[in-house]
Image 1 (cartoon, rainbow, N blue to C red):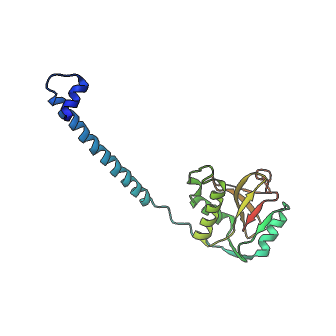
Image 2: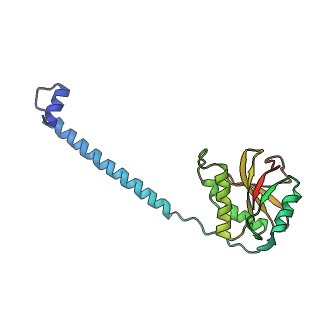
Length: 191
């Protein structure tokens, strides 16, 4: 039994179904061509995404060097019983103006949030790692705040000020101005 016979049975026609058979074959051929075109366009779209250039990182000058004791004194001065896990002995820090340019450049906040797969701690890790990698400054710490059930970042400046950054949306504030937003009491800070 050929396609024409099957069509004739389905359509209940007793007459010649040659025209319908030709139309169906043309439709199937066109459908296959469209599937190939769609697959090719999807592949081309993925390639084009790679061509969209991320702007070059801003040039950062005015980098100060501090020791681990300085970082510890800033965190101790917050009087929040923060548990610090030191990552380095020497720290390279830039000022707030330079750091604002860094935050504007960074694309961590454009990453899709996926619950239990890529969520708050992943954003905080990514932001810290990106700043360390692209700018060779290690003034960003990762905060694991069990009281808030959240992870985010802290930035320490050469003048001893500290800011909190929410890497999911680039919100940045001095912790003294909004100390109750993320409590940080007893938090663990990797810096």
